[in-house]
Length: 394
Image: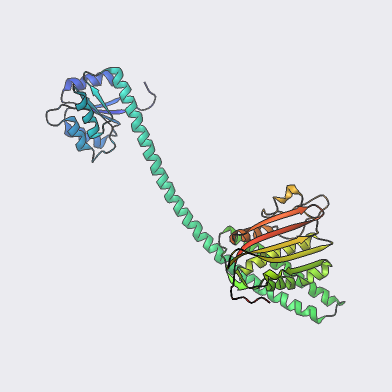
């Protein structure tokens, strides 16, 4: 006898002797309901979770097959076993196929066959019920996930709006501080204490602005709130702006820093200028941090693919401290800052290369990094762009 609740069985037969014989033979195995009345059978089915329904085929008011047919609309998943004295096998098969019953048993029934058949029917019923429950749970879980996703979308949207507002509110006063401190730098003589103070204010503001930018951009990336903003521009203008941005640091570094635009790249292109600027800004910033002697070279070229489509090739090389092979795979992870025995931790958030990677992927580009410890690093980036056919080479 199986462990657990007894299977609930309903047996409909017009002969009470058959019902009584079935009940007393199997009551220790099953929770048995018996009736000679088909109306009573319907009531039991409606009120009790019957797992297997046995019905006699030959009854005075309605045949077993016709009765099962009438039950299907109300109880479509009911597992039925038809008990019959059919001598004709074809008639029996037709009866089974007509109402799609689980099994057909012949009279007089055999106890072992009954036990085996009902066990299989109960297993089938419980598997169906289990699947139905799992499906209901899955549907409910999907509803909950959809609701959670909607909340996340709303949260991400609010976060995006907040970060953009925060960026504006912080940038405005910082730009004012940096702008006036830069004016003071030009006003004071080189060797005055005032110029030193003004220089400190400006460089501190510049660092703070970079840190805030990186944190806000990284947060927007995490919230999937970064959008592309395409415009037409000249690559040489982009490199000029980068040169101007780093002019003071380049002068202080005493490194040989060059910005080169290949002849093929002196044309107007269409892409996201701001994001390309940020990618190169972060790479140049790292190069200046980790290069104490030698050179830094930034080059730009265009690799034609068709009349209107090309690839923008950007390369940043330096002769800095380099990165060993083990750490090379880690540099694009958030907050990653590589420390070697003979190196000190550089300033910054550790988000610069993470932002570069996210922007390159957003622009559907690719990148490659080559580096040797104590010899330098080379970053190569390829970005798909559109070239303006109306461009006049300069």
